[in-house]
Amino acid sequence: MRKLLITVMAVLLPLAMSAQAQINTKKTKIEDFTEKTIKVVLTGNMFFDQSFEDEVQNRWRISPFEFCSMKEFEALKTDDSYYFMLAVKSQFRKESRPGLTMLSVVKGGAAAEKGIGRMLDVVTVPIMSTEDPSGREFIFLPAMIDIIQEHILKAMETDVAGYSGLGSCNENIASTREKEIIIARDDLGAGITEDMLKEYEEYGIFVTDTDIADDMMMEHTPDAVISFTVYPSDRKNGSWCYKMLIDARTHTLCYFRRHRISDRFGPGFLPEDLDRIADR
Image (cartoon, rainbow, N blue to C red; front, side, top):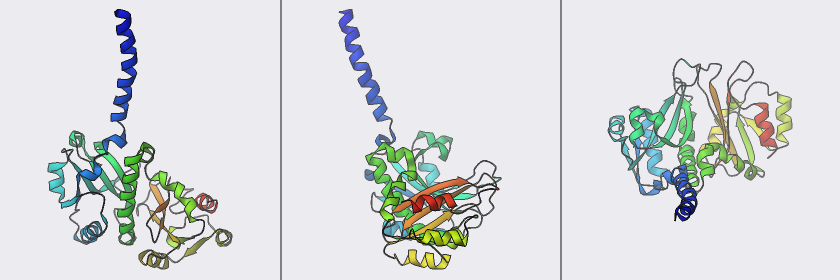
C-alpha cells in the first residue's frame, strides 16, 4: 500500500505542479480580458483627455470600456474585475524626475495597494516626453490605441508575446520589404551622415521633414511605414530612447527597440537601427 501511495503521489505531483505553473502564466491571468470592462483613466489635462477620449471611443473594439477619473481609479484599483488604461509618468535611474509618459494597461487586484508598479502589466507603450511633449503624440495616438489592442489579443494567445512585450513585433519588419520606410528627420540620431542616407535609399529607407512624415501618418498613406521616437526632453545619460516604425495604413507596429542615452549614443535612430531595418 505504501509503495502504491508513493507511486500515485509521484504521478500526481508533477501534474499538480504543471497545472499550477499554467495557472500562473500571464496568458492565463489575462484570459478574461475581452469579458471584463476596461476603465480608461482620464488625466485631468483637458487638452490631452479630449484626444484620448475621442480615440478610445472611435477605436477601442476588444472589450467593454468606461471612462473614469484618477480618483475613481484609486477607489477601484484593487478590484480584479476591472482592467485599467492610464497614462503613467515613468522615472528611470539617473533621472531626477519622471522623463517619459507611458500608456499602460494593467489589471486590478490586491497588489495595487502597493502601487501601480505592482499591478499586473498587460502592455505599456511610450507615448511622450513628460516635461515638454513634441505634439507628435496626438498624431500617433490612434496608432497606439490599435497597437495596444493588437498586442493584448496576441498575449491572450501565447505567453511568448505576453512576456516579450512589444519587442515581439520586430518579426513584422519582414512585411515591409515592399514598402517605403519613412524616417522623420527629427527622429535621426547622431552619427548618420548624408552619404549613409543615400546608401539606405537603395533599401527603401528615406528621410524626410518631420511635418511630411506626420502628414503621411495622418493621411494613412498606403505602403508607408513611419518613424516615431519617444525620449525625455530633459534627457540625461541613462535615460531611455524608444524607436518605433508604424505602418501608416494598418497601424501595425513593425519595429520597436530602445537604447540608453549616453555621451556616445544620443536620442533617435542609430546607424545600427537602420542597418537592421535595411536587412529586412
